[in-house]
Length: 141
Image 1 (cartoon, helix red, strand yellow):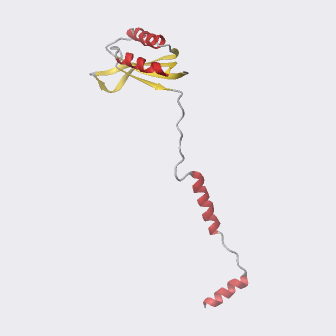
Image 2 (tube, helix red, strand yellow):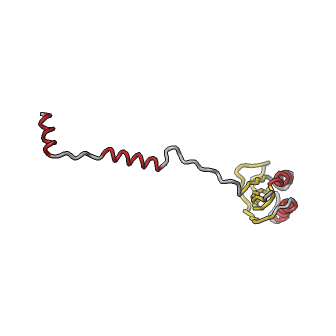
Image 3 (cartoon, one colour):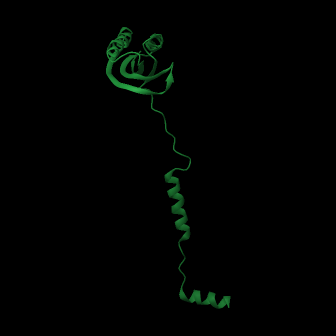
């Protein structure tokens, strides 16, 4: 089975201090490495306000890991992090899955341009001779 690239974003609640963040990050790193994962990138995003309070907590330290691991190991890592008391919330996403196929809208730009071109072609005037025009005027009166 091939390794896929994943990203995990996790939040450490503010009752923990900045000095605690590296220790907790090391714990998450070791969970991933014990499962056979390889850490590619680690980033501390800082202390940020949460969008809404969780368990009466309003701020947290956001951290991000990008790593490679076999897909079958993700479930175990997810469960282990969920049970880690120092982590308020986390999310694991796949980075190199198949790209989504974007469908064109029903009325695409190309179709609209074709319709405009057809209307312009219909509006082209038919040139008539002066004699024909005079005859048509005489017929009207």
